[in-house]
Length: 391
Image (cartoon, rainbow, N blue to C red):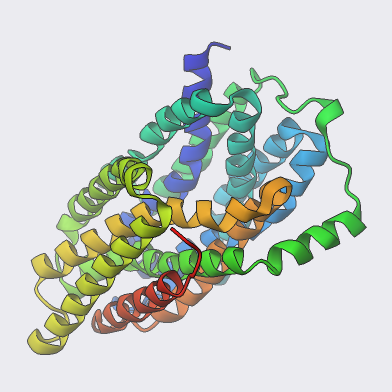
């Protein structure tokens, strides 16, 4: 396999996570009708939340891939994603669909985790950074394109075909993945010794920096998960402009992509801690302005003001997260692999669960979301500014 083919395949595997969320957002209104839910119901957002919560399996798959290699875990992940996706299409109830989406999220976590690990196995230093940049550049375009693809499918078919698309895409990538060779040789594999794992868990959870920056990331991800899962309801129902949804979602996705690419320059020039503190100050200012406007002008505020502010908050979120994750893992040395799995498990599972609590309140207005941005951003700001580590 050439390097170009490997980059394209890796980007394709990582795209499954974003595609499993973003393409379905335009179909949520049809899904509410299918299950006989009222137009203002936020219950369908749970199919996004449960997909996020399925990422709890990252921790298990990370340990297993170190023990048994990347390919076996990759080939467990694809069937879980495909079966969960197809089961969601034929689910007789929303609760069953959410369970199927949880399984699909578990599959996505296995595919995502082993893809990142495979890049680490094959490349080091600048080569790894360069390869990951190419992969992420392709990956970050998924939130821009997926809503339009969902709308295009809806124009000629039903929500079921929209839901079928990610597992069908996964089948193609799964077949393609059989060209991959194992990247984690037997002599480098780590046996599962529970005493060692227990000590590693204790060391990680006892590290103040890990907890500080993991929960900082978790608070911000909670806000992001509410936006992603509730965006279709907000645009289509609260603002009554469903035709604008793919344009708004794609526009914010583009801003987020540019922010993620620009963040590398900021952190390199100023350092991770000063960058996080500055970005969180801006995040808190923007969320405060949005809160004051919502209180003064009524709920919901003007659509332009609201989504300009939300776009800025989401862009800041994507710039903060890589720095926060790096600082969480920085002091953990040889346990960094396990720590990365634990961090991903915590911020995906806890963040999406916290976000779901906020999201269920967004029925007649956006005030719960706006207040959530303000509170979560303030908590993250406190965590960043109470870090006494020298910058």
